[in-house]
Length: 225
Image (tube, rainbow, N blue to C red; front, side, top):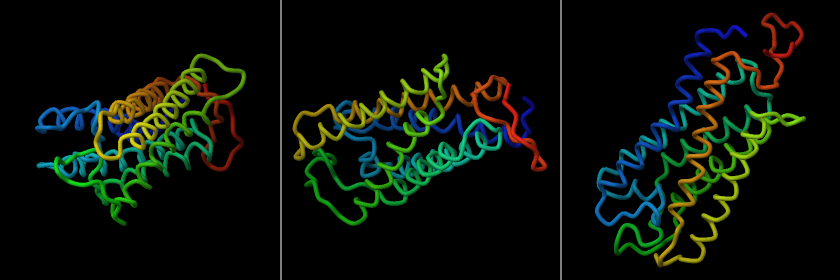
């Protein structure tokens, strides 16, 4: 399958998004005194010194996810549902960056957990991303299942399970008690990041994803190869 140069650039940019996001929160978190990656959420890094780094990380990941959605769609490797879910996830990340979170789980130290309109908007954006990306992976799978389809389902299901556990741990420790919320929030970023990168590599390598390729000029769709 021949892929237009612009589509290649969109896919490459989109696959860089999760790698940059993970690298950013890993390094940023390691440099923040009192911050514990297994306990604290990614979002609260925006409330620490140098918080602009986490804000920009959300915004960049969101923009690159939208690029990824466009690249996947134009390459004929995703249907309307997957495309819409990826756009929703990208928009959610942008919202999460524009509206920083409220203090939670005892970070920043000494700050009470509160709920503000700004924090609520952040949570809604983050939720859109946390659910949109796994859902996009699930709807790209086709029947009968083959190797790639199984990988997509595994990435989606494991991510959703981790998201559920994240909310369980956040609810169980509202005042900052010992919690593994940070760990379970990070797992979906790894699972879905690997899925995004693998999908981009698969498309750029010309391997079939089971979706039709639409011929430019309004022609009929043909199976991608």
